[in-house]
Length: 285
Length: 285
Image 1: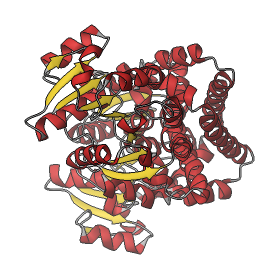
Image 2: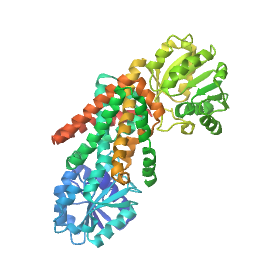
Image 3: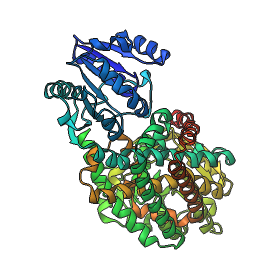
Image 4: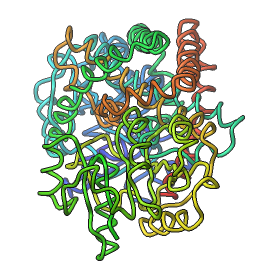
């Protein structure tokens, strides 16, 4: 099996690391226009062979794992270049724009739209790690538009990697993911900004930061090159979630201004049920 | 050594668990007006003996670890009851109100104001755990107001527990901690609220939540009984940090509305330096 990964970072890199371990007969071809990343990926053993787009005609399995804006232009080219029996998947955090971009492509049936909900705040080939996808959710969109035999091929790999599959239409995916992923990134980045700005005037403030701050601000380490186009592509949904978040924060601020501590207590108590919800996430993991 | 802990939860419970292990000659007396917590603490071996306020005259070392509003009324009583050689410490997340409350107490020199910056999102005796304080920061306020011999006694215990000490005046403590701790709790609670409200109308949204959401929303599991009085006591500083946070989020929203993705990219890049800052926290841990 010839597996190609285009964009060898956290997601693509981790995926081929697992595939290599689970399918000893697989050869991993890497394509990346960042020469340093390509060399790192070879040295780390994330890929076996540095390849180019011209080699794609040989591919059995292609993982496109590039920033979502790059994917929009790249994916049609990839589909142009692959053979009739190749399955191509794209793993970005927005699904509607990519599904639209290749809706009428003659090789639409060679494509499967996925969003493996897994990751860390790191990026590049050094961020690739084994078992990143174990017990994580993989959202698949418009599965009916992928050739049945190629669906099977992709699903077998996803199952080997330990993922649970959920089917969803791309619009619903983009709407929901704005709340449970994209908004968390903005809340974290802006929390980091607020504290960094304060630190400019108040030395040693970070000396006082503990694990709680670290947890809420962790996503502010994420890659701007990856996240800017996600916010752009999912602008309407992200704006909706962000407006609601600002409105909830403003309401909390007003309760504090009014010294309405009973209401603040009740607010927090009702949000505490997130415990059970997060337990659900932990069970899934 | 007779060690009393008043309020046997995450902080007080964890502290006496360590003291018990490190000082085999210590006997741990627990006081809690929650009878269930008192029994749990005995059963779990967090305390050796259930005690009452009347026993305080025997104490060598007293840890007051109750919600900060309760501490304001309780601490003067505790100081009234302890002997001349007892050291009393209070561990809450606000320091100025408590320092003011006992400023003129005849036994002021038996008190040391501390904030061990450690914790989890859990509470009660079941949340107590060993080594919670290892390599964590302990902020001590107004150290000069504590009798020198009693300072030494307290510091020796803090060092045994593995804490690094920072001295700070109570007003600066409350101002800085609003940014690196209190604000994180509000951002997390309101993020939880935003997503829970959405979930009411959109089933299965949490099925899509991954580790990033879990990390940013973890603090929303925290105890409202503990956190409401913290927000109340530190109202002015919390409001200042919250206003700045809302303003940064609103500015981000505006950039998104204006499709100014270059500015969004730059914003995120400049916040990325939180990586080094968090590395600093991790090194400390």
